Each structure stands twice: as structure tokens, then as C-alpha cells.
Length: 425
RNA sequence: GUGAGCGUAGCUCAGCUGGUGGUAGCACCGGGUUGUGGCCUCGGCGGUCGUGGGUUCAAGUCCCAUCGCUCACCCCA
Image 1 (cartoon, rainbow, N blue to C red):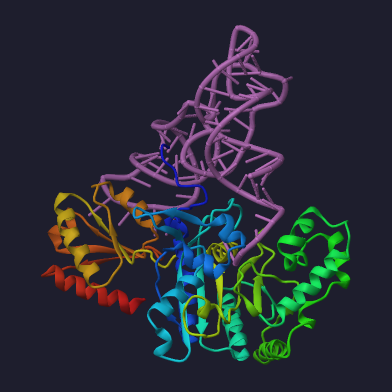
Image 2 (cartoon, rainbow, N blue to C red; image 1 turned 180 degrees about the vertical axis):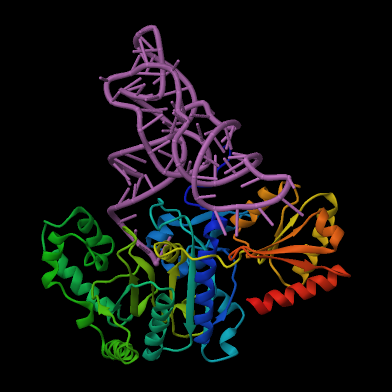
């Protein structure tokens, strides 16, 4: 092998592609049920967009972005997440002017230069969903309910954790209190926490070390320091979840890796993916649209990792792809091959999935091929059949076989066969 | 960026303390059936043992380096 794919970039082979298609099909269906419209945006953007939205001091911006200078000398970046691009498009095209609240989703690849591991790649794919133009907590609940329904219809069981990160009024007050608390702790924390204490104090509380957690028993909790507005919002959001019957757990220590989140944040977690526990996550980002140069509109969104959904789906029973040929045409000899090709094209034109072999191989060999492709039926045409103006139609499931007269024009046979197969489906 | 494990056929893997690469399984191709798949059976195709050095009479096996993959830390979808 001379040239291989880049580290962390994966080929999705034909055998697994139907798992992806199923996920995307169910996702699109649900998004449409909830009134979302698809938007397709570029994978390459000006670097500035992500720096301004995600935050200069985040891990993503500091060390994970695929950033390079293009031929004109401009700094460009392969998008590391979807929200920034969607909001850029939203603002650039003035979508807010068309309707007060916009519901958008996009599906596609994201890029982050991290060390790959189970469920984590450098090119990965997200289902990304945004609601712009409302700050109503019932929308927060509705959005989480949609994510929940999607996982449910995919047959995956996960847990929902939620938190509130407050707003520009109450979060700084809490942060100050937390820093004060951490300084009073002295030494004894793990190395990571020692470091985070200064770089990202909020994240300290998320530490997995039992030892550190003991120190944090008395730590101030964000949910107890929300301003009245944020507290009301959080209460209304959880009320909404309860009324919709969505089970959730409050995790006051949950933090997000992007700076733009405000108020509601949530994660959809599984324990079946090794170290990668989040299959989806999101939150509210009031203020982000304005920060990106747009109108002062609130927003909320979430993303789900398609690879992680695929990993979880693949742990379920295998499902047939549904793309098996409805007919495999077996042609024996030159003359039959020529007639067969015309018949196959006629059937395909009538909407049937039809396969055939062009190599002139033996009958047995072609039957094997039809079986391997899991073709529903075979139509055998050889010299005998040509002479008789007929074909042998075999049902590959039952094993029964009948002589099928093929009189007149190919177009006529094709239409007749196609409508007959439809009825038998 | 840090750490650990692993690189033998298209895939999954045997190969013990160095002594000629496995009739291995799956897959693929062909026969057993004058023109009929799955099951069975027989045969065939298929390998720079990741790469480069070193030790040795002899290296898939031991040593070093290097590349790649995987998992974990970090972080995240």
C-alpha cells in the first residue's frame, strides 16, 4: 500500500454505509416533524469565525483546528463544529427577516486535529440543530425532547444530563466565588485540577478523581448562584421536560468546551463507547448571534456525533441494507447477453433494482453471484430460452421456477415484469 | 502534546524457550451437477512476516530505530 488515508480520516465502506443512511433518514424525518429545515453550509470558513464564536482560549481553537493559509494569503479553517457556520449563513442572508424564529439543521463532516481513539476521529460527522430567535424555556425542553425521540427511534438508550451555566450577569459572580473556594483548598488536588484551577476553574468540578471530588463536596454550585432570570428559565425548562415525560438528571458540574454557551446545557450520555461518553450535546447561546455581527437574537442548539451513533447502532443486530437486487439476470452465451442487457436496462428504466454479470461466466457461477447479492429472483436466458421466446424465472427464497414467455418488444416485457414484481412485493 | 499495547494472506489469527512461512478459518475463483444458488465435498489463487539496521552459523521469533494502527490521558460529538 503506497498511499493511505490520513490519520483519523476514515473510509465508510459499502458494507456499513446503510447504517449511516438509516441514521440520516430517521434524523431528517424527525427534524422535519419538528419543523426544522435543512441548510447546507461550506466546510471551510474564515478562521476568524471560529475564533470569535468558540472562544480564543478553548482547546478547539488553541490546538485542534485545521487552519492554513490559502493561495491568497487568507487564514482559513476546516470547520470544527457546525453552529458557527450556520449562524454565519443565517446572519449573512438575513434569515431572521423572513420569520421571527428559524429552525435549522445541517448534516456533515467536522474536523479537529486530535489524537484519534474509539469514537473520536479527525474528520467526524455531526447532526447539528439550531433554533434562532426565541429564548422560551419550552423550546429548550422541546429540543431535548426531539433529541430524545431521535435516540429512541434509533433504538439507542442513553441518559440525559442537564445544567445551567447562567448568563453574563450571574456567571462571573459564581466564578469569582468558585476561584475563592479553590484557593482556600490548598494542595492535595490531582495534577489536572491544579492546572485547571487557573486555566478553567469551572472544569475542575467535572474531575473524575474520587479524591478531588471529596474536596469539592463543599464547593459552591452554579445552580444555587443563578440570577432570578436564569433560575426561572432553568425551572421552566425542567418543568417542560417533566411534562413531556423526558427523564433527565441534573448535573451541576457539567461544563461545555465552547465559550458561547449560556443558561441551559445538556449532554446525551452512554457508557457503551469507552472513554467517549457523549453521543450528543448542546445548549443555549443567547448573545452569540450578536457577537458574530448579527441582530441580538437568542438561540439554542445541539449536535450529535454520527460515528458514535453508528458505533452504538452496530452493537445492535445487523439489519439488511434494503438495496438488494429485485432481479438478477443470468445470461448464457453471446446472444443472450445482448438480449439480457436490453432487458435489464428496460427493467431498470421501470424502476427495478436489477443486477447482471457481463463476464459470460457459467450458470452455476452466476447463480452463486445472485445468491451472494441476495437477489430476490433470477431470470435465466440461454439459447433454449431465446429459441422459445421465453425466460426461466426463479424465486430465490422459495426455489420455485416457472417459464416466462417474453413476446414482442423488450419495453413491453419490462413494463409487464416490473408491475408484476410490484404486486408481489 | 503524554502513556501503553499491537503490526504474519483481502479479513480473523496460529507460529512454544531463535532451526525450511500454516492442508488454519472466513472471503475469492473453479470442479463434483450436458444449463441452476444456499449445505456438503475436492482443488486453486493468495505472504517484501510494517520498514531499516543490529546480534547470530541461522531471526516471524532477540535488540535498536522508524512508520503505522489501536486504546487510554487530555479534550470532546
